[in-house]
Length: 614
Image (cartoon, rainbow, N blue to C red; front, top):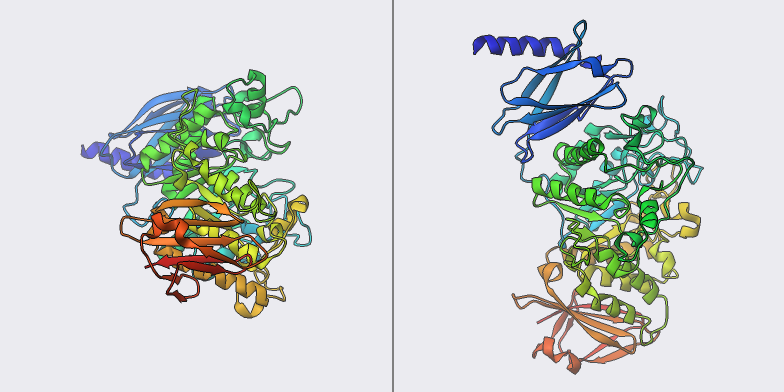
C-alpha cells in the first residue's frame, strides 16, 4: 500500500509539471459525490495525433471506463467512473504511444457543504435582469485587451461599452436597497466575436468568463458577496448555438458537432412547429437545425459526446460558482429530447434548483408545452420547472395601453389569467413587464407614470416569479425598433458620466418617484407569503376596473384594485363578499393609510390600491 502511495505521489509530482502538454482539457476538474459517478473529459492537442496514445489511470477510486476517439485525431474523450466514497485529490493519467508519453493529473474536488449556496429561486423572489456591458464600468483596465477582437467604443450603440463584474459588485448595495432578491445576468461567458459581442449570446468559450467582464474568480467573488447580502444569482446560458469564433469551430472533434449545410441556412424561428401535432418534419428540422444567425453556429445535441459535454458544462458552473438558477436561452430550439435529459440530470443533482426556459411566443399552449408536468398529446415531458411568461407580458403592455372593452383594456389581464389551467405550475412562471428583447416598459406606457405604476403593482402582486429589467426603476426609455435604445448604459456607471442615477440627487423628480414606489412595493412584498404562495381569486372587470385577492390559510387577505380609467371610480365592494367575509377595514400597503369603512372604495384615475384587509 505504501509503495502504491509513493508511486501515486511520484506521478502527481511529474504530472503537475506537465499540465501544459495538452491544449485543452475540459472540464479542467470535477467533483466527488455526485449521483452520476461518471465524468467525460475532453483532451485536445492542437499538434499531436492523440488517437495513437493509450491512456492509463493510476487510482484506486477512479476507473477509466471508456476511451472514445473521434474523426479528428487531435481529440480523445475519457470517461472516468468515480467510486462512491472517493476522496478529493489528483488522479494521474498517463498517455503513451510506445515511444512518447503525455501525462495529466486530473483534479477531483470536494463538493461544497455550504447550505447558503445553490438555493434555487421561487415566487418569494424578485429577479433583477442586468446586461453587464451596460450597467457599470468598475475596472477600466479590462476595457480593451490583447487577443480580443473588440475593445470599448462607448459611442457605438452595437459596440462594447465597458460594463463589467466589478461594476456590478460595486453597486450591489443599490440593487439590494431596491428590494430585489436575485440577479439575472445576461451571458457573461467569453464572446470573442468580431462584431456585436456585448450582448453575450455568441459564446466562444463555455468554461471561461469573458475577460473584458473579469475572471472566473471575480464572478465567483461576486456571487459570494451577493449571497452574503441575501442576493441570489441566476446564470443565463445558451445551449442552442455557440459563437462562430468558438475555439471548437477552428478544429471540430467531429463534423456533426455543428449542423452544417451546403450554404448558410437560417432557422425559420417557428418554435410552434416543435409542438405542432400536424407539423411537417422539414419544418421542425429547419427550426431546430438552422442557424440562429450567421455568427451563431447551431449545435447538434444529438451527438452523444457533445451532449455530455454540454450537460457537464452546466453542472460544472452550478457547482463551481454556486449559482442559484439557470435562465436557458431559446429553449425550444435545441433537440427537445436532449433538453429533457439536460434538465433532468441537473435537477437530479440539485433538487432545490430552478431552471427557467425562454419560450418566446405569446400563446399559452405553446409556452405550457415546455413546462414540466404538461399534459401534452405527444406525451413529451421537458423536466423544465419554469417558463418565461410572455403571454402575461403582452397582456400587461397591451391592456394598459388601450381603452377598456369586453376583451380589451384590463380585461386582458383577467383573460390571460383565466387560461392558467394550461400551465402545470403557473406560480413558477417568471413574469415581467419588459426585458432586453423588447421595448422598455416606460416607453410602452406612453411615459405615463400612473400606468407605469399600475403594471408594476399587478406584476408584483399576481402569481408568479417577477423579474425587473435594470433601469426600469429609473424610467429608462427605449424603442426596440431601434433596439440598442433598450440596452442603454446606466448614467453614473462610468466615471466620465455627468449624471449619477445610482443616487437620489442624480435622478429627476419622476425617477425618484418611480424608484421609491418600486422600492416600497418590493420591501413590502418580501415578507408577504400571501403574495408568494397565496390563492389568487379575481373578479371579471367592470368598467375597466379590475379587482383581485390573494388569500392564505393564515387568514391573510390582500385586495388589489386597478382603475384603468381617466376618472375616479367608486367601487361597491358588496360584490366581493365571498372573500371579504365581514372584514370592515383595510390598510394601504404603500401609503400606510387606514381605511375604516371598505363598503365603498374610491380610487383615483389610473390608480392602483394594494390593501391589507383586517
